[in-house]
Image (cartoon, rainbow, N blue to C red; front, side):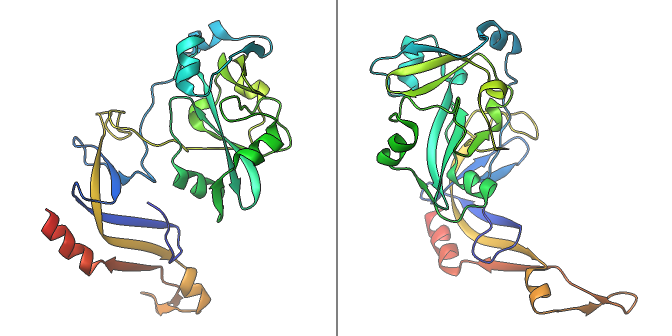
Length: 262
């Protein structure tokens, strides 16, 4: 799921399904697709363009939302279902305050944010930092008109219009938001966590989420170490070739534990 400490550009985990496992695994029983939650993807139904157009406005419109603090609050009282909201999270990535946007009914998979940005030090921003930068508290945050902070957005909000989001004023939101027109997105990426029941990207059947114990791992190291140590081998024609490297790990204690648990 992640690159791990050895470096390199890819890795494969070997996981034993077990209710006592430490990882959530997204699995398709129909075709065998499996991935750690940190890397798993799923299909989404395309956005309803007609419904977006019906809610579109020439400019975002402010409206009062007293006491609204959650996606559910806004959905319940203001004709703004979760899939029509833009959720605004604030993170500090390598010291830089950054807005992270997702569809209201989706959850952030933090490892995907790390992988997409290449950030090393990642943490949610503190309430004081958020208020100092945006002038509002969580529940009323948004990216409309924000120019001085980088914005990273999930692909599920790309191209959407007629959306609702916070106005960066406590107890006020905006409706009729057109993402392309009103928000300056610096980078797009798959940031959302896949969920049980969503369609598999390979075959379209419903995904399951199961627990698993990681018992082995392969890291593809590429040329990271062969370049560093200037390692070559003789190819079929006798000429020097730089080999691609991989490393393979089996957790002996984990294997024993998995045998016991299952």
